[in-house]
Image 1 (tube, rainbow, N blue to C red):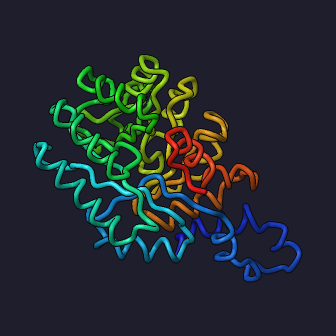
Image 2 (cartoon, helix red, strand yellow):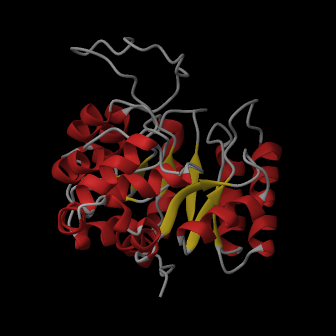
Length: 296
């Protein structure tokens, strides 16, 4: 279910004592371990892939994910105001369908500054709690400045699609994934975080195939930048390293709709119970508390 490699590591790392005592890994109750943690999914999409909102809920129920912070960013096309308003309306419709489980993150395209600011107000008034943006404009582009200032005033986080291709010695095209030219990379986050220390930023999916070691090293001294665990990559020691470099308070649990992998990599990490609880629930909830939107 979590994949043979990940499941094996989970058993080795988290159930070693049980295995030694009984002589068999079969006594380890994986789902009991999964369900003992409260979880907030800080990165998940609706109606983007994997079916409609009911599919998100099926996975969440199976894995004990209490609340899903959903968005539908503009991943193709020009990203006109009509496009992002329509995307946000899809999110709002999903929230009405599952009001106890879904909480919305709105999307905009800052190339349309005034329309974006109007849409932020509309979505906040309707109960959404954060901004999710894609690759139309880099996070440190001056077009973003009024949006960042607005989000800082709201005390809400800016969740940005981000990536950094694997490389060697600064050469980042060792594995060419045809990354879009306006995709934000760690240096862009460092720049905007320094410019706006009062704002909060979320570097998306360190578990989506990016160079997570370099990313964490770059973001180490940017305390207002957080990372989320989402993505299908299950690299060994990924979360251990993120906690080591960034601290245990700057890592969020997120799936990006890769639910089993994202839960499994937290369980498989060599972290304390307190650290796992922080990643699964407390860290993101603490950010939400700044705008009064935290989960009781």
